[in-house]
Image (cartoon, rainbow, N blue to C red):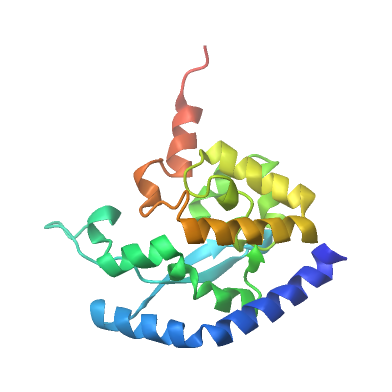
Length: 210
């Protein structure tokens, strides 16, 4: 009952209420980023969600579009703005995802939506993460957040799918609150310490069998 109906109702009630309360903050950040970025304050990216269906994920834009002499984007760490660092550290860059929750693309709690190009690299069991809506926060995030290995992060997503309950969701919300307040396990540039999933697993698959 909770998985099929109550969770979605709670998502709507909580996300809608929080969005209304934080709307002045939302508008203020959007205005500041509009000036800093000289345009669109939002970062929009296609991600796979429930049943691997693609949707547009919204976040506040934390990086510039600076490119090198060859027209290629500079590394993330170079393009990350001072305002972007603050937003990532406080998790306020995730605020626009409340819109994703309200329209039904996401849940407040669930596996983080990753890149579409990762889809072919999940094991059969890891694909269970797409049998539920992706979340703004999740079991993997409160158990290492952005500092876990890929295997550990995906195993945590499977654990959440198999044990989804109201009690577990409340535990995740509580731990998320503590993590945001303390800044524990928050990585400003999550790509700086681990390879993309497709690169890591393609490398493993190409290793000779001994």
